[in-house]
Length: 110
Image (cartoon, rainbow, N blue to C red):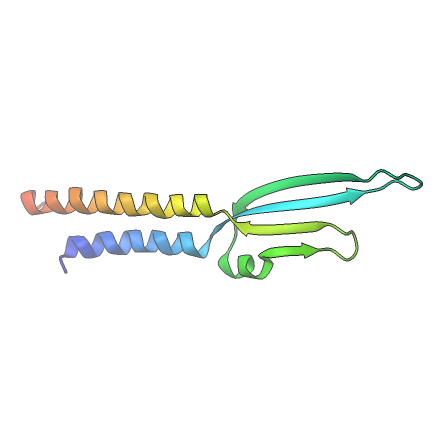
């Protein structure tokens, strides 16, 4: 393999590994409140997004209901954001490969 190709693969492989180790997630929390003597139940839904280490994400993924408070919590992979990250990394890797390696072949600077 050409040294330039190895360098580009190493750099973008490391970035792709970080994307896989810290997946983007979406969290939805649903709380239900009922006042004493009332028939009405108030439902409050909150959302959150972020990144989480892979082992923690796999442990928390899915739907859980708290026994104490009755809070429902759903954690799912943010697929569109994840695929977007992978796509951007692939496009930038190809761009860098063609630009940097072709420049290196022409000028022998890098």
